[in-house]
Image (cartoon, rainbow over all chains, first blue to last red; front, side, top):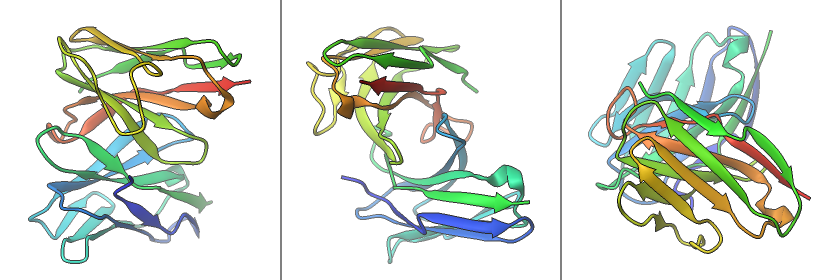
Length: 111
Length: 116
């Protein structure tokens, strides 16, 4: 069964605005990852946050993790049209390195 | 970083036939994963393929329907057998060990399959 549930399912914003996507998961994790997918192609890894971390930054990306609520959020600041894509959270746990993906958020950034 | 290619990139197949998807990596990797992404949906793990051992399938996926080969550390195939329209999906392979570390994955570009 899917670990992650993202909301919103779709988000449309203007260039320059910030985009926030949320993810919830069900069981314990070692890490929580975010991936981006452009137009049904392969996924690209964006950022990983470990279960003992609360916040992490990478360029225009900021991810938070609240293990007590089993939730994470991804913030993209100063969005660009090129950020238009689907964004998925993925729960990582255990020694087998398997990832369980959420349903994803389709982000559209309008120029 | 690993570079992953998949063949074919897309195909249209008739129901009842089988399609074998190839995944080639430019470096040796221990763990490879096969995912299915149904239209408008998220990724679901089909199986984990380690070289030299049988693939490990997730709940709801069986070897007879999705046989997997892993003959060496740079190559794997996934066969979608006796296809039906419900098998229309994007099939992606990935390898362990992204730029961050072993917990992350590199993904191939995917194979878009349409079954008529």
